[in-house]
Length: 301
Image (cartoon, rainbow, N blue to C red; front, side, top):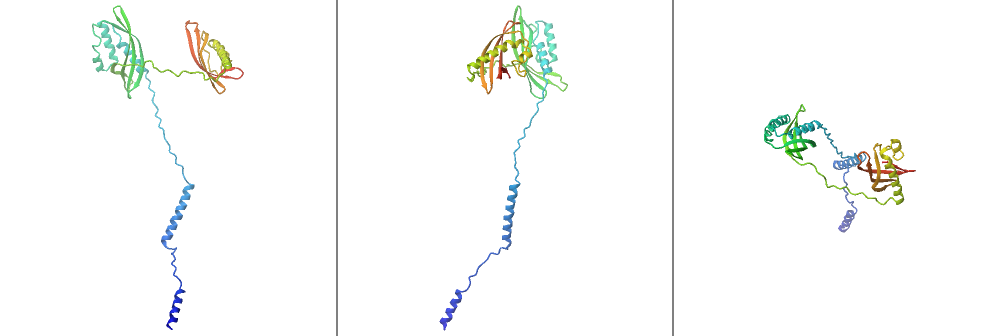
């Protein structure tokens, strides 16, 4: 009897259903997470369609330089140099010079220059030429001026020419009056540069027949050119590239013509030798021309 009852218990436990736990999808946390995910996705789509291209803009500030008229400064310094570097070996001449330079110097510089030309100086000086080499603005009212003076120095029967370079500083006040604030100070001026341009050479793109044609054209043109009228030039030159010069030159020869082909054009660098009938001197002019051929050769540039 007991045996039967236990077997029944076992059977009942086997047929008992297993308990299943379900997540509650309506909990507040889950709803919040889904809401965040949907909003994020929508925002990403919105940004993709409304994206703004951002370009970096570099602003360039252009500062207009004021053009300063320096003619008055140049003339002031030229007049000063003529008075300052001119004297005779006499008391009256030296006194006149000292009085003249008061029109240019500050009081301090006047005192500094009182005795630079001695009363017993044995030479006289005459200014032949004053050249202004540069005028540099140091600040709003001060200008540094570099100039040269060509003097003839006479001592007894002997004369010699000298050239010297100096710089001064000129102050310009609000009324545009001028005064020299720095005594003439020795300096240097530009000299000849050692620069040599690269020698041009023909690039071999023009054959011998074409070279011969062009040479004959150029000889004909340059014989006519010095005395040609505008109408006569129009047979050789397009669009008035070369204007009449009205000179009494006689053509001599072409020197060192160099030819370079550029598409349907030929660029020519050439020196032209003339005899000037007025001065009887040889005149050599250098031309860079562009030629084109339609029916005949023409100078187009």
